[in-house]
Length: 259
Image 1: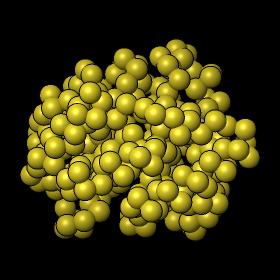
Image 2 (image 1 turned 60 degrees about the vertical axis):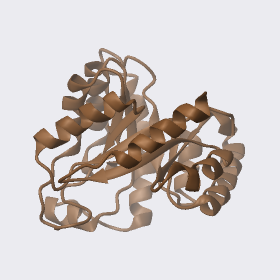
Image 3 (image 1 turned 60 degrees about the horizontal axis):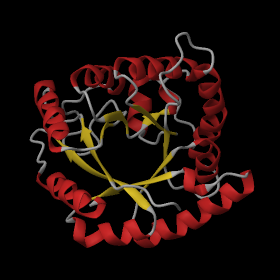
Image 4 (image 1 turned 30 degrees about the horizontal axis):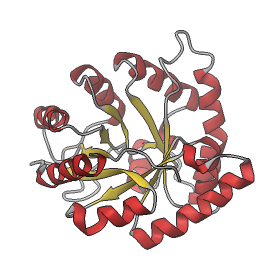
């Protein structure tokens, strides 16, 4: 994988907090110098009180597009099951314009069964949801080419997940960024598999930025993950009190690495 500047993301999880707190934290993160501000696409909290306070993903991204001025914004990740792919492309193009070209389209096949049950979506199987994502990504790409006005740029597509047969093949075909989970050993194995998928479809793996979720101090995992090709490191925080101390350490580490 090619060498890239280190970037730091914050996944500002829209759970257990009022919106004023979310807005303040987004502003603080931008002031701290993060490169990407993510939320997530769920309808209920993923941890803590299961019926706790929670807000919707894409309406929030539109607000962030107006509120912020420098950071890239996106979902980590959008659930493909919740919106028609042509509609999702139009939503993404709209937020792209509102933000003056700062949207990342993070997308995955979905997994949180409660979201599906409560909002009336068919849960199906993990394989079926991945097959649907494979069908929908070309539809999203096609719609981008038909919209008037067109997106301000080639909207970067981030695909999240580590499935070695289906997900990483989709990454090789469609993604500008691959978001991975797990430790260094897992990342090393899966990047090897991704390289093979890229070879199979004639894609330069160096075109794909490797993103990873991190926790703890940068010195504990950052150098090893960086050595394996990761360049976008994302810290996750949940409400009601968003503690950005860990994020600050990763921003300092990024600046030291990038020189």
